[in-house]
Every structure is written in C-alpha cells, then in structure tokens.
Length: 517
Image 1 (cartoon, helix red, strand yellow):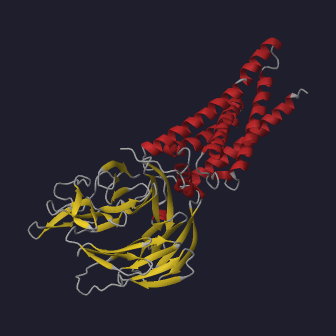
Image 2: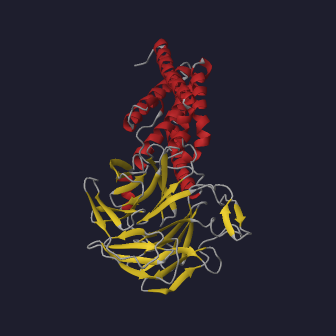
C-alpha cells in the first residue's frame, strides 16, 4: 500500500523527533556529568584506548545529527547519520555481549537502567525506524521521476543500508581488537575493572593492629603477631572460629631482633634475618627447631620449599641490595644473583632497588616487584633471570633524592619518595600488585579511599585486570593473602575475607604454561 504524502511526512518527522530527543538528551547528560562519562568510557572493556577521542566525539556528533534532523534540507543526511551512529552503538553492545571477557553492570548514560540485552533491542528498534524513514525519504524524493530511473536510484540508495551496517560493525570490531592490543602491549596507564571480581563476605575485629597474615592451610588462615612473635592465631575461612597456638621454643641463648612467621602448610618458618636464624617446625605440634645461620643476613626471605629459600640482603662487597638463594642445611653455599637488581644511581643501590619479594610455587619462579618504579623481575629457583616485566603505570625511574649523613657514611632519603607499588603477592601464574598510583579516568575521590590491585599474568607478561579493595576509616590494607577461593586482608585491626568471583576465578583456574625466556 502506497502511503500518501502527508503520512510519509508525519512518519519522517516523528522518527526525526524521536532521534532529536534521544541524541540531545544523551549528549547533554554526558556533558553535564562529564567526569562520570569519562570514567565509564575510560574503563570500557572495548574502547578504553580511544577514550580521549571519544569523550568529545560522541556528544558532539550526537548534537550535530540532532541539528541536521531539525532542518528540512539536511534531514535525509541527519537520518543517515543517525543510522550510522545507532549501528555503531548496536555493534558495540553486541560485541560486549558476545566477545568481551567482562560484561559491565550496565552501559551507563541515558539508558543505564536497562540491561545490555534490553539496550540492544532498544537500539535495533531505533535502527529499524531510521531505515523506514530513509526508505520513505528516498521514495518521496524519486517518486515523480520515470519508473526505470526511479528504480535504479531507489536501489542504489537502499543498498547503502546493509553496506553501512557491515562497515560500522567492522569498524567497531577493529577498534575493539586494536584497543585490546594497545592496552595489553602499549598501555597508556588505563586500567580495566571487570564487574565484581571479588565479593565481600565477612570481617572480624582482631583487637590489635600488630597482626599480619602468615599463611594458609587446610581451610585455616594463620596470623602472626609482630609484638608476640611466638603466638599464632588460627581462624577458619568464615571467620567464625579461632584458635591460638604457641610455638614451643627456647630462645634465651639467642639474640633476637625481629621475628616474622611464614607458613607453608604443614611447615612453619619463624625467621630473623638480623640474627640470622630460622626456626622450623610443623603445624601439627608447633614445636620449633632453631637453625642458626652464619650467613646470609637478610631483610626479606621466603621458603621456596622445605629446604631452599630466596632472600634479599645487603651485599658485603657493594653495600647494596642483592637477591640470592640458599639451602637451610648448607647455608654457607649460598648463591648471590648479582645483576638481578638494577640500581638507577651510582650513589644508591639500596633505596632505588627496594621492593617486594614473592614466590610462585606452581611456576617455581622468584618474583621481585620494585617499590619505586614500574618494573618486576622473574627468575628461576637459582636466581637466573627469566625476564623483566613492566607494571601498568608509567614511572620508569625512581623519584628518589638521597642525602648523605655522618661524612657520607650513611644514606637517607632527603624527601619522601613516590611509592609506585605496595604489596606484591604471586599466586599460581598470577601476580597481584597493590598500586599506589591513580590511572587515567579513575576518580580521585575513589582512589583515596581504596587500595587498587593490578593482576598480571606472569606467563603472558600482561596485565589482565584491576580491582579495588575498600579501606576502613581512611586506613588501607597492610596484609594480603590469596587462596583458590578467597582473598584475605588486614586493615588496621580488621580481618576481612572476600570471595573470588567468576571472572577472576576463571583466570586462576587456567592451565599454567611455562615461562619463556
């Protein structure tokens, strides 16, 4: 049935008016809440690498199209522009739903109350309306011309519809793939925050702020205590029951300075690197045996297995930090890995190489994350370098100023340094780093209240995702531990447990591949 001219005009005007209302409202909403729009687009799982361009392009082009739709002489091209933009939006949502590793809670903006599937249907309806209005516009324009000429012109214009849809879909797919490459390989410090990778479960008041997480085994979390180093607090994962143990050992004849507990169930290790000594035993009876060491003196040490340890100490030759490994049964035959830690200043080697030592039992790899620059080291059990990786931030050089005291014999920091990486914990093939720097498009008011963790795949040498851990009354976490199912943290006097959800759990359950050189 052929529509009369009045009906055709009414349909075109109604569709144009709907698009004008939609685009003007959407553009104004984005501009009025521009900071939130920046955050949403910057943390998009598809287009975050192009966020700086899209911030302004999207609302501006929406307003231009709305203006074109309000002018009769430009209405056809306004409708065509509306179809193009709506096709781009629809392609974006389709890729989010079917190809993205993470689906955000909502698409934000004017239709944030809708789910992704509902938003996809909404967009398709508007695409159909645009095609109908364009179809009528073409028929109206060529209606008085000879039939043969009218048919040729009509189909030449109408054939643009599927071509437009294909081009728009291909463009969004290209942006998705290239953005993914840029974020993973050429990261401009843009984080990806998946939807709820962890979920709060419970917390308990420890009453003292001297506790730290020493280890985990058989469904129990073990806490050490800096002020009472021989006492161990055992807590189940639901935080519903506790039990206190005391390590049985006579230390009267030893000069103890600072004992710290590490538990690799069923073994425990109570270490003092300034003595130096290591107390070993099992969690079955908590009876300790002292292993007095002639060397090495160490500031950090981690058991790789029941006999072998990786440590960081001060080289007697260079008076600089050095990594090394030793066997507790034959500590004199220690191996120092000179060259693993790289200083930035010839006058330093202590502060600029400060960092966090951790170990992956599943990969059998030593990992050291620098505190003041964006680098981490991966080495084998003998201290041989596998590779040097980059954390997601852009601080390549430690921002440290050194002052010399006592006629140059003592070094200290002249001003507080820029701390880049706080805690670092390796678990299976993943590295969890507590970053102290705010990335692009992250609200400043949020970053002040939370700890930001970046998760790296050590086998792929890439950053997988990031997530927030909230602080408590401006206190941030000072102890962190991860298992297959939970993350445990201590903030001030509070022990909190978080459940690991699907997207992070999926990464933990992946088959572990070996690390290439």
